[in-house]
Each structure stands twice: as C-alpha cells, then as structure tokens.
Length: 422
Image 1: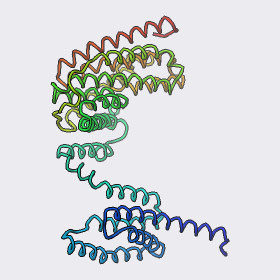
Image 2: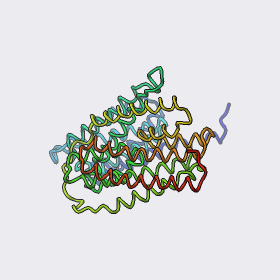
Image 3: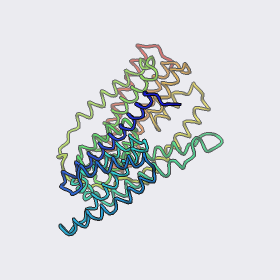
Image 4: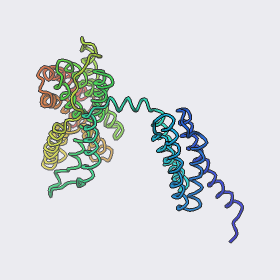
C-alpha cells in the first residue's frame, strides 16, 4: 500500500523533532564546556549528539560502534591536555560520552528522559564550584544519615507486607514503618534547616513538620534540644507551639475538604485554640541571638524513630479494639485515642464518614476537636520522653493547658449555639 503524503510528512516531522532535541541537548552541554574554556565545545557536542541519534535510526549496532569510535577522540583530548597543562579532562570526557548516550536515547524515542538528563548534567557541570563546596562541607555523619534515610524508605519499606499481618487485623507493619520514615525525614530536614539557618530553622521545621505529623515533629524537636539544651530549649518550645498551630490549621482544612457541613460544629473550638496558640507563641521572647553557633549532633536518631514507631503500634491497636467494642457510640473515645497517633487521620476519617452519611455532621465536628485536643495533650509526655528536659516540658504543659482551655470554651459555645449529640 503506497504511503500518503500526510503519513510521509508526519514521519518526517517526528524524525526532525528527534534531531532538533538531540541538537539542543548537544548545544546546551557544549555551551557550558565552551564557557569553561575546554577543547570540546558547542560544535563537537552538537555533532556527537545528532550523530548518535542518526546512528540509532540506522541500527542499534551503529550507535554502539559510534560509542567505541569516541574512545580515540577522548584519548586524544586527554593526551593534549596532559602534555600542555599536565592535567586530564576526565569530566569533559565523561560529558562527551554522556552526550552520545543522550543522543541515542533521543533516537530510541526517550525524548523527555534525555532532555531532563541533559538539563541535570549541564547543571552539574555549570555548578562545579557549588558542588565542590557542598561536598567539602558534608560530614560523614550526614552521609550516614542520608544513607540510613534511603534504606528506611527504599529498602525496608517495600519489603514489608501490605495490610494487617495478624488474624485480628490490628497490626499494620507498613503503617508503623511509615511513622518511622516520617520521623526520620523530619529529623533530617530539621538538621538541614539548622545547618543552613541556625535556630531560625526550627520554626520552619515546626511549621512544615506540623502539617505532616505534629506529634513526630514535637518528638524530633525535643530530641534535638536534648543535644544542646542551653542553646536550643527556647527555640524547640517555639517550634513545638508552631507545630501545634500548623496541626490545628491542617485538621480544620481536612474536615472542611471532606465534609464542609461538619465544619460548622468544629470551627469555633479549632479557631479559638489556633488563636490562643498564636498568641502564646508570640509572647515568648528570645533573648539569645538566633545566629549563635550550635552544637548539632547526628542527622537521624534511628533508635528514637523506632521507639516512636512501636508506640504508634500500641496506640493503633488500642484504638481499633475500642472501636470494635464500643461501636459508633464510642466514636469520640476512638477519636481521642486516634488523635494520639495521628489527628490528621482522625480528621480525615471523621470527614469521610460524615460525607457518606455514616456519621452525623455534628459528631464528626466534635470528633475532630476531641482528636486535636488529645494530640495537643499527648505532645507534653512525648516531649518529655524524647527530650528529658523538664523546663521545656513544664512550659509546654502550662501553655498547652491554656490552649486546651480555649478549646473547651469553644465546645461550650458550640453546645449553646448549635444542636449536638454529645
């Protein structure tokens, strides 16, 4: 069957698209090498990229022959550099080989992968000074911390079975390991923020970590302050209170997203607790300079993360048993127990149940409030267990009582203004 002009034009356009992308990748890498005053520049890299694409279109064997043919060229470039400057162009040599491989990827149809890798590779070449500076500043503890985090997330987690592992469907190892992963990730992020911004980074840790898991964030901040109590205690307290505020905002948003009608029964208490938390946080005055030097320990405490994961399992089992024994009537008790583990999960569960009609909107709203209050109260023993700092724990307890009192006042106001089922 003869090819129509439209098919011929389409094939030609697709072919030229690949040539244009490989040419762009080669020019991008070559320009960077040109600016670095290397012998291999725009023309060489562009020709190598386009030739690699054309070679793959001819035959995969032709592209392999091209890669082998580049070896004499790379040898010549290094010999010339060594005789002239007594140095080898190893980076440029690898960049030229990588350019050829990217051209082959384009010829094979992996356009997006090749373009993305080309941008990343050009960035690594252009940011030589920054990369060298970063590598020189990284300590062996930070490397071990990054490797440990990678093993937790990419090696151990995929190996764990999905769902419950017991006949009673009480223990979920993946859920427990997720808690370990979250705590480790928050700890590593907090370490980086401390290295970059000093004690100012703790506030960002509290805000961002509180949106993810406020209890894990409080535990991490308390543990971090334990390593340098004289310097970090006041900032850890600020971070914990910020995490509480972020948690309240998150829970209100989750309930509103899943069941807007239930928000009418919970927003007063949540708003009062949030307002009180912001006020008490703003009244804490820091006397030390935030740029003071810090004594920072290892990025991740695996023992601390495992302890918190085990605690999660215990509370999760208790919550499941309470839910089975008490049924819907015990939802508030389950919400309180669930708030000890994850107030976000409690808020989402309440919102979903209310949206599907399985739970009255007022009970869902009150459940979110109870779960949030339980989480706030639970942060005090968590801080003491992780930090062993009675000064921070005492101040956190006093301020938490004030915030919880605001929540109780909100519940009373809601009971007077709106019908309820408590």
